[in-house]
Structures are given as C-alpha cells and as structure tokens.
Image (cartoon, rainbow, N blue to C red; front, side, top):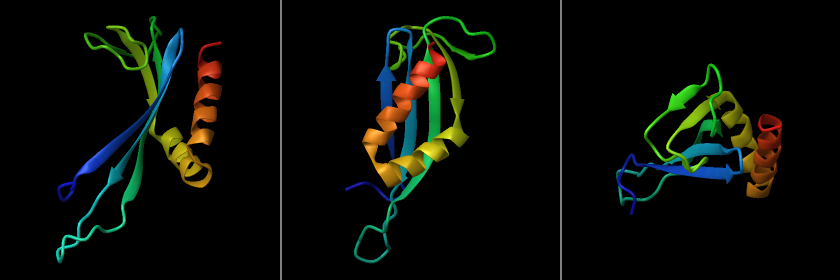
Length: 112
C-alpha cells in the first residue's frame, strides 16, 4: 500500500540518436481517515522536456549525471510545464498511443 500523501512519478522517455524527449506527470494518492480506503487519485502534469547530447546555447546544462534520454554524462535540457498540461489532457482522452505519437513528432521537430 502507498503511504498517505505519497506521489507516484510517471515518466515516458523517447530516446533517439541525437537526444530524447521526456513526458512526466505524477499521480497524487490520498487515503480517507476511516478504513484506509483510497480516495480518487489526482493526476498532475509536470514536464515535457527536450534533452540534447550536444551543447545548445541558452539551455540548461546538466553535468555529471547519466541522462535517461541521452545516455550520456552530459545533457542540455529545455522543458515546459505548460506543454505537459496539454499532453496530460491528451493522455486522459486518447491514451498512451497518442502520447507516443506526440513524442515522436516533438522529437522530429526538435532534432531536424
């Protein structure tokens, strides 16, 4: 059982030759005080991010970690919480196949 107030982080990663795309959201669980029954979960959008293997001027440089989207020790990252809100609506209405399509299109757009 998930402890009260625990958040479950969910991530989609699309990885390609030049970098990758991530989509992240959380499931916020809440438990009722009586009987430990589960209240409805709340989905919260977090991030849609682009991860480059090579330097991109003005983007956040993330050193000394192995990036899940590039597989390298360095990553240049740019993300959007607003885009994640839109994608979460798509996930709710059209399912994960639609998210994979959005990620593929976003990868093609960012890695021309």
